[in-house]
Length: 194
Ligand SMILES: [Mg+2]
Ligand SMILES: [Zn+2]
Image (spheres, rainbow, N blue to C red):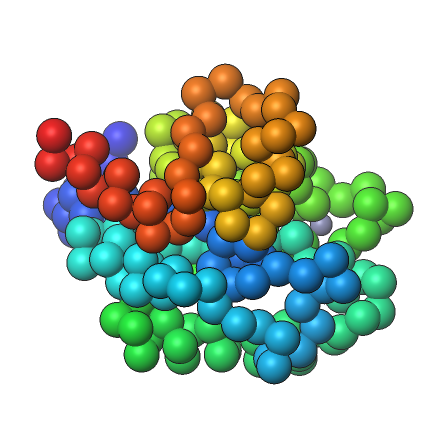
């Protein structure tokens, strides 16, 4: 550990939460979220991100966006969706530090499409942190598997595809389940206070 860096950044800088996007922050669709109009936050999700920030957490997003690779929308549109997400988050007192996305489809055989751990490894490199024990929130099995692969703590939310994911079972060991992102934040901050 580099102690000088620790003094520079302070202990709060080491607190990180990794979120999936669709079905966690915003409403999901089996037809993909293809436009800014289709990007609609789930109730309470952006306020929950604000509460994480206030508790000293950096919030980063790791999201599969194969709609790019499928030609359903382009990178400019994806960027516009994320600009909308950041703007609405800011209005709710929240800040998303960065969005890490995989634009590929399964035929690309990339290393970043979850359940592959590439996006998480990129986050670890960018922030120079070990992801062991870092909470990672998702609504699909592949989110939890990617988290578990790097030693992050998988948290399943029951929004989006979450109920189907829970019913299908085979969740990684130690997966914790919450009704929503807001409920996850309640539980995380209550654990901190305990
Ligand atoms: Mg999802
Ligand atoms: Zn990829």
